[in-house]
Length: 423
Image (cartoon, rainbow, N blue to C red):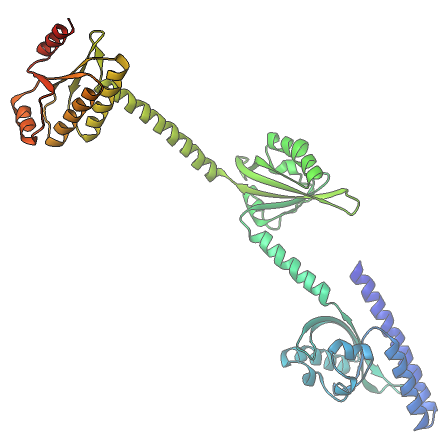
């Protein structure tokens, strides 16, 4: 609509200019050569300078023979720097080629043309203009040159280029981006959205609704919760789902932006959706791993309790039978269990039975003896039972002081000693 109006105004301006040129030429033909010709040119130039629209005149060779102030200002030059020059004298060759070709075609065909092209001003600034040009003939039908008007469309062209860049970004982003009106009619969907839904780039969106892209439960949330919330607070975000080409639900994280007019009335909405299938898989895996770790820790705790039991056999005596392989970690666990048991039961005597320990290195033996010495600090006498010859050799080898530790060859002897002592 705007371009049609501009075209109409430009064509009307050309008609008026042609009429005025014809009048001036007719006056020139009727008047004496010198005085009237000078006055005619002055009158015409005065009229053209009064117009805000840039105007140019060229001869049949493409040289500028006149222009108004607005045209000189548009090029950033003085009028005297323009007259007698060609477009090649004023602009780079690649820009001048476009204008010169149009001019020569119009002059040859005695035609009229409207076109848009780049212009380079005196300071090197690139601008864009809409040219309306027409060949001019005199009263006898002789071709005398070219006249044209210029409309600066730089801002419009820049806005168009910005829009094109924005559309390129929207089209190539991996996120799904769509727009809908207040009735829920989809008016735009980028490549990612069309591809996910199984629509080609040429598919017509007419008649498609927001509900066509979502399962029923998600569409209900969008219509009843998301859009009203975005209307109130400009945006809404949440997790819903989209439908793919096979009608399967794809979990998405969605943001809805509300766009209002100057009166605050909602006019359309923009939606940005991101596939979170992988994110949800990762989250599920992390939750499962956390649960699995908790189970493992619970099992470890149970095994620790089973592998290092502390059994009270009287109000003052506790027994800890140790079975299996003892490494450094288990030795530390034995010490902790023994000390906690002695403190909890207020035991005065603790029996460490190592009958079931098949192998014991010097590090483990030392750790067990340290446990016995620690229990002694809590006031409990430690009895070490089940010592076999090879373990005895290890204990002697590490040179531990055994004076505060009672040793028995069997558990039965240790229990008998403890019961006798408690009497």
